[in-house]
Amino acid sequence: MLAIECINLTKRFGGLTAVDHINFEVKRNEILGLLGPNGAGKTTIIRMLTTVIPPTEGTAIILGFDVQKEPTKVKEKIGVMLQNTALERFSPVYDNLDIYGRIHNIPRKERKRRIEWLLSEFGLEEKRNETIRLLSGGLQKRVQVAKAFMHHPDILFLDEPTLGLDPQSRLKTWDFIKDSSREGQTVILSTNYMDEAEHLCDRVGIIDHGRVIALDRVEALKDSIGSGDIIDMNIEGDFKSLRSDILGLDYVKGVGGEASGLSIQVKSADESLVALSQYVVERGGRIKTVSVRRPTLEDVFIRLTGRTIR
Amino acid sequence: MTKGLASLYYRELRVMSRQSWATLTPLITSLFYLFLFGLGMRTLIGEEIFLEGESVDYVLFLAPGVIAMGIISIAQSSGWTLWNDRDWGMLEELLSCPVSSSAYILAKILCTLTLSLIQAFLVLLIGLPLIKGGIFVANIPLVLLSTLLGGVCFFSLFMPLMSRIRSTNLLVAVMTLIYLPMILCSSMFYPLEEAPGWFRIVAHINPMTYTVDILRAGVIGAGDQQILGEILVLFIFTMALFGVSVISLRKASI
Image (cartoon, rainbow over all chains, first blue to last red; front, top):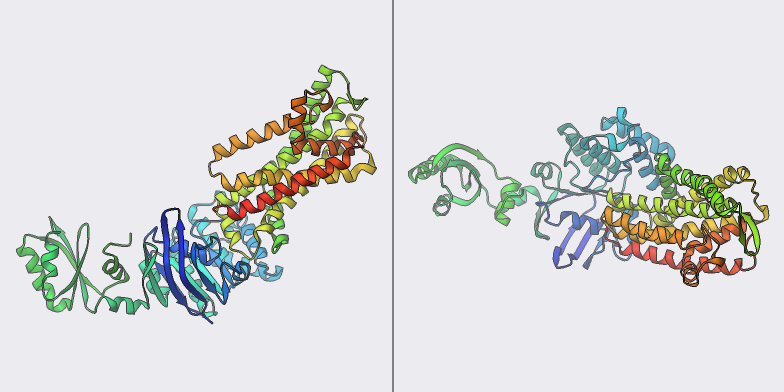
């Protein structure tokens, strides 16, 4: 049985189509990343899959249950960590974890054990009795993430779980996500961090303007824009006019670019770096820095959408 | 329908217990009204007023009204916890948990009723002996019934507003607009027999009047003859408003 099946899933808010007839499947035990810029529709997809808002059109099947017809059955199978911090602000850290555990019917002994373990893992032991509203934003986010791992649902939805976390907590969260998958959970992870998607996800769906414009394994997505290298050139002056000229070179496969330079995809950096640099200099470009790298998900995104993710 | 009710009720009580200042305010306000307003008015209008042809101490007459005022304040306060849940993202999270939206509302109502009952009996315990009043033990079920129906009714009245209005300023304005006329255009502060005709009509489409009258029947034994009719009207008000509040939460944008 599939973990998730989206069938023409659509959400409109008035005249705005936030999610536009998306179709995808997620296998059990898989970590699927939803990658896209802010406003792409990732959170709306998660809100529909977790039964918080109903779809305008189409539906989704979660472990055999329709999100519209059997929302209660769906909710028994899932766990959710929302993008925005959802905590009892006038209650202490311990109460927040305990109440969440009770709502998920975790027996008292197990609940206490898990709370102590999570407080320790996320460095919250000394804050256990502190009221949430007195904690910094980063600490509140840690409590929110810890809450997500209080119980063991079949499918865990994490909406930008590491946004606002310090590097140490971020790595800890990654470990928890990987452990969850190892223990048999399916994880849906919404993020706009490329490294997070590359590091954690079995497959990544690239979301833009409410549509899934690509969905595959990370390496397959990278291969989809062709093999080769990326040469990043930081160029002074008006380099934008160079773009079309460079694209015409036979060893160039594609050109993307930021405000401060160009990202040029070539068949081989070893064979084309010197020639390309000379070509730019001859046309009046003043090269400040040059670096060579393998294509990333960001390049895939730029190639598919024509713009950067942020 | 009520899946998760016990854990949600526990949540309400635990969260409320962390804000004891907010929980105690309706009780303190009730006692202030009973002693400051009640005793002050008694000085102005004389020791006793006439209710259905019988003289009653004004503070004793006021006591059921003060309890009803406490009930509506607690209902309003519970309504604010719903607004906070929505504003802080808790509502969205809870609705993705294995609990039903009906259980969510029922838990808030149960919390409202728990606090209302505590408030009602504390006012009676603290207040009445000091003013030489007594309570008709046989009528305690009437105090319980009016507190329960009034609590559900007032919470259900505020809930659709709390689940729909986003602006705090607008919400405070609308709440005040509802709260004040409900208190003033009722039998809370004065007997309706002497009131002008138009006032009595307005008072009789106000559930507060029925809540106060049933409480008054319980506390001082007034209006026993028509009490069954009043209970029925309050029950109908309560059921209608509860239905509206459940539909409203289901349709509310989170």
